[in-house]
Image (spheres, rainbow, N blue to C red):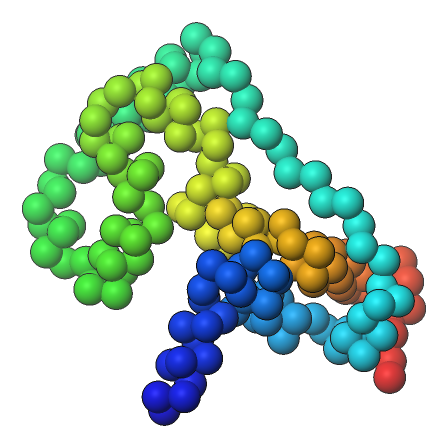
Length: 170
C-alpha cells in the first residue's frame, strides 16, 4: 500500500502536471472507450482546444447576482438544521470544491459573485459538469494530446450512439 501512495504523490506533483504525466491525465486515458487508440497514440491528431475566457461583468450580471444572493439567503434561513443533517462526505466536498462560490454568496457582494461566475467554467465548483481547473493538466504537449484524444473519443462515442457513424470494433 505505501508504494501506491508514493506513486499517487508523484502523479499529483507539480512536475508531473507540467510534463503531462499526472493522475488526472492517467484517468482520462483510462476511460478512453476506443482503447486501441492508445496503442496508436502518435497517429491520433492533437486538436487545438480553445477554452472560453471570462466575460466582462455588466450591470445586468450584477443585478442577476443580487437576485441569486437574495434567493440563496431565503433558501439558507434554516442553515443550522441543514448543516447538522449534511453527511461528512458531502460537507467536505462542498468545502473543498465550492468554497469560492459559497464565500461569494455568503458575502452578499453581487459584483464579487458576478466575477466568480464569469470564470465558473475554470473553477472547481463545476466538477461533474465541466473540467474546471483540471484543464491546467492539458497545457503540456502530452497533456494536450491526452485531452484531445479524450474529447475525440467522446465525440465519436456520441456519433456512434446517434447512428451517424458505425460503431468501431476491434
